[in-house]
Amino acid sequence: MAKRLKSGHILRLPLWHGWGFAYAKYVNVVGLQGNDLYPDLLKIFDYRSPTDEPLQLNKLGDYLTQPVLLAGRLPTMRQQLWQIVGEMPLLDEDRLLPDMRVREESISNSICGFSPPRPGATLYTRNLAIRPAVETATFNAAHLEFIGAFGSGLIEIRATMAFMQQEGASIADYFDLNDPRDKYEYELIKDRPLANTLPKSLYGRARQPGDPGYVELL
Image 1: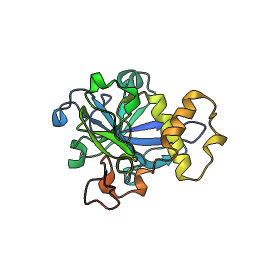
Image 2 (image 1 turned 90 degrees about the horizontal axis):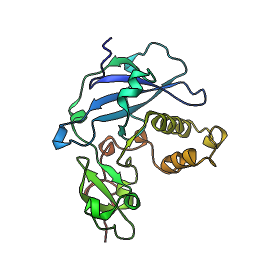
Image 3 (image 1 turned 60 degrees about the horizontal axis):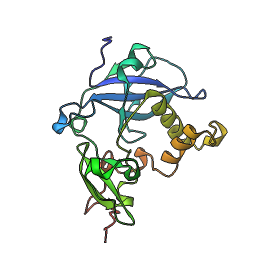
């Protein structure tokens, strides 16, 4: 199998605390829809295996979490922390950049060029471009991943917690929620619905006027 990572490759990610392995589709998004900021996007499937067994691609269907941006692809692959275990065709939807929520308090307005959202509102990006950010009622974007690239370890932790949430396990039985890193990751996902519990139209997309459940911002 080719060693150089390319769009459509399936990656095997180790989960924490003996939870086996997760699987994700990799998409290089540089140049898509004018994006020149972020190269690497992952779509994590809602399937995990207890061991690093040969993968049956037909087990990969729905996604567990919203699309997430990866930082540190080269060292992750060079150190063989993740492995390429298959390949799937790129779909039209893989060539569309996802909407991502903006963590308003973490980025200077003078850099991003947006005003703080109104009470009950949040901001999200279109085409990974922070300028201009789009204001909407918080509910319409609360399921989205925050914009920013994350290292492999944080993505593994987040995926592990998501599987635990899906399977009804107590995350606190495995992770130390007094640890700042683990607490941060837990706070990110504890109230965020899993991607496979939402309509497929909301995978990587904020709710828009006309969508079921859309909340009008007054």
